[in-house]
Amino acid sequence: MITVSDKAKTRLVNFRAESNYDESYFVRVGVEGGGCSGLSYKLNFDNNQGPDDRFFEDKGIKIAIDKKSFLYLVGTELDFSDGLNGKGFEFKNPNATRTCGCGESFAV
Image (cartoon, rainbow, N blue to C red; front, side, top):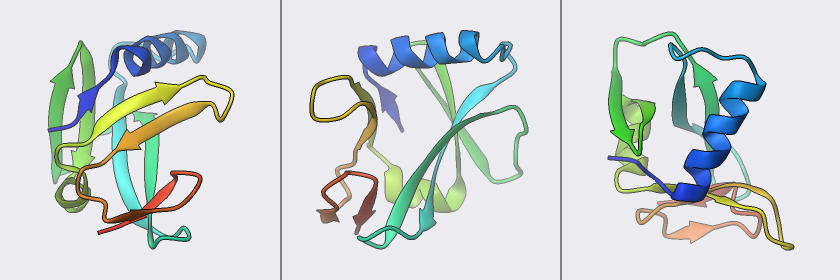
């Protein structure tokens, strides 16, 4: 399961409205090879369901994740930081054994 913090929920709801995405769009979370630690996070809105997608809902936010990415992200919390040290979505991934300084890539 992927969870969403209150700050991330607020930002996702606002972003969906600003982008004129209707309720058929969900948040797609995934992992791809790359980054300085080996794996990078992906996050976007989508409305096309894949055959291997798993769906979760937390705080009213519907999240899709493909089967392969799920293995790396189970238990992850999606958060949003708007502090002085950075601004953007953050993945609090309990499976990561190493992360890069910017928080955009990880290793397991």
